Length: 239
Image 1: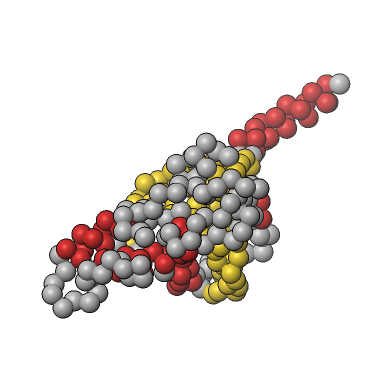
Image 2: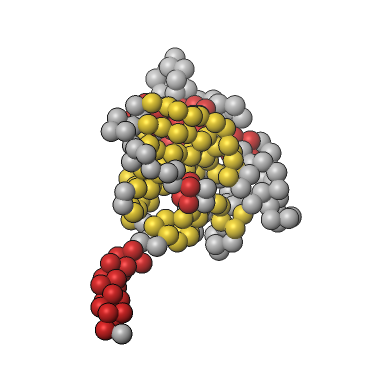
């Protein structure tokens, strides 16, 4: 009996930190996503520079569970149309790169081109920062399209990333583990979409921000028939 008590006394201090880092499904109502994190993530407000040098607000959600690092970066493109309008107002005559052209295809200041290229731009930045790209594939999470990447870094660690875009927000998901460690599957396979009340959103048909988010087609129904998708309002200048 005394030996059992001694063993328990030794185990309790060792297990307490592990409990504090248990994986849990984290939901964020403002950025309308959910994902498994090892504990509540730290949130950092920052900015993000797009392919056409627009500066947008962004948040980085980050958590660590030794030896892995896990981040979700969310970039808000909803104000891009207004930035494009402002850039075109100041555009020098004859400068085609910032001219007024609020068409369905271009948008003032080429802001629609910029938003359509968001996933490709983010993907290219991840590849540029890595030592080696070992896999790049088109994928989806709950019927929202994206890019799946496996990367090897200069220190031998590996990053498993997913880049997606939903309702004018860009999502850059990165799970990094040391050389030889298993893929962070509990993190990378858990991404989902929610509405403003925390209800899960799984579309009945494939969703693309280029076509649905930017207003070319109505959003697919989701969860067996609910309409519209998350955040139906489009940014300024969206048709």
